[in-house]
Amino acid sequence: MDRRTFLQQGVAGGLAVAASPAFPRSVSAETAGAAAAPPRAFELEETSVADLRAAMRSGRLTARGIAEQYLARIQEVDRRPGGTNAVIEVNPEALAIAEALDRERAAGRVRGPLHGIPVLLKDNVDTGDRMLTTAGSLALAGGPAARDAFIAERLRAGGAVILGKANLSEWANFRSTRSSSGWSGRGGQTRNPYALDRNPCGSSSGSGAAIAANLAAVAVGTETDGSIVCPSSANGLVGIKPTLGMVSRTGIIPIAHSQDTAGPMARTVADAAALLGVLAGADPRDAATEPGRTRVQPDYTVFLDRNGLRGARLGVVRGGTGVSDKVTAVLNGAVDAIRRLGATVLDVEIPHAGEYDDSELEVLLYEFKADLNAYLATRAPGTPRTLAELIAFNQANAAREMPFFGQELFERAQAKGPLTSPEYRAALAKNYRLSRGEGIDAVLRAHRLGALLAPTGGPAWPVDLVNGDRYTGGYSTASAVSGYPHVTVPMGYVHGLPVGISFFGAAWSEPTLLRFAYAFEQESRVRQPPRLLPTLELGVPG
Image (cartoon, rainbow, N blue to C red; front, side):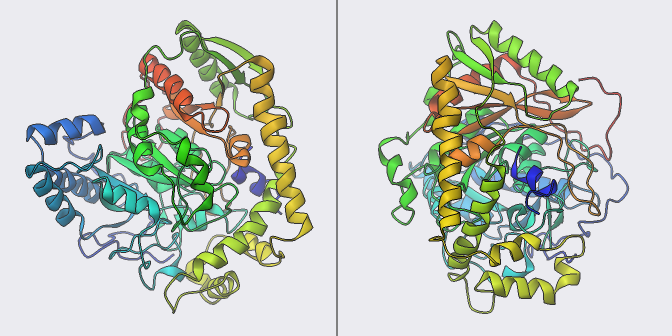
């Protein structure tokens, strides 16, 4: 059960802004519209980071030319009526940045594996440039952040072209128990490119839909519980939720410091691994990254091995995920493939799963108030500087900010006390005990497993702005609460909608998980690019 599930089950109890001078938003995000003509053939469709690097190295493509192609793709696929609506804003400096990187390459300087590669950032990652960082809220649309988030600094230093910001579920899906994933007051509703009337899932919904639709090479998402892995699964992508502390949170609009992390979203394991190596690193402004100084690897692509499952022992978690029989059938086929690759797979359960849903939310409410107040204090005057002021802003602008759902989670968080409260400390201790030593670690140790498997999620549900999300099952919570790593990879389709398989394990086990995930991906090769269908073609097998 992920955060979206227990919020909806009661355990937790539009204005479209111009995207940029270059790409004004041409249609309200709530307008489904008639199906437009299919987009033109796209030269860079499904092109990998390695392929883009090779094309620039040979001189066949330039960073500017690549950026121009992706910007044109955004205009055609994302901005049209009834389009994906995944990119909330493009970077007006993207082409100038790309040109500068081309000059550096011509002079013999290549900054790293992402030199000249277009990247989208979720719109809760600060950039100290002409773009806004708003978490999808009109409350923060008054001006840009003061400086780059630490991970934005690392991306720039590594040569990435920050192409723009991806839409998201407003405030990372932590405002209401009845929200529609992918909707924000600033950006409207993001749509799943496999069937445009379907939901893209999770708060990193724009990042997921954009990369699935080939609007950039890779994207950065963020997760508290399920918000990288769910949109990756629902959009046919690879998503990595890293170990807590591998990637800095400085300059990222928070939910809860005990669970928040940024991570890669990509079309292949190799692309995700390349992005992870750039994002990961110790940040003196985020104490949680200190343990990573001796554990973070400079290059995660070195762990990719087509034979990586040979001799492995894995446990598959089938019960308690709430997925349908059709998803279970796809999972069974994936497990058979993993066994054919030489792995031993046992059926297991995660001890105490589901026993910390209430305490997880308790911790999130306490930490949200404390962490968001600290973040808002860094923003420019004229925007809300506290959660209380943000609640007041939403009340004063309810027609634009709350036309479909409210802010009951904000109000519950505001009522919480400080992080010294005994109730908070007890809930956090319970979460860590049950999810770590008595949870994931216990089952790995008992069965001598290298990792665990589970279905990441069910197929995407129809967008429903009236009733909110209808979650279709899957796995995320134990890894989220423990702060342990979680990698999802496409494993198949249900009526043409993608579903993913999760590889997860102990803290700092990313090299092992990526080795397993890559071997499975290379054997299965199930990902197919979306066709941008206006609605699902029922009866499509698989």
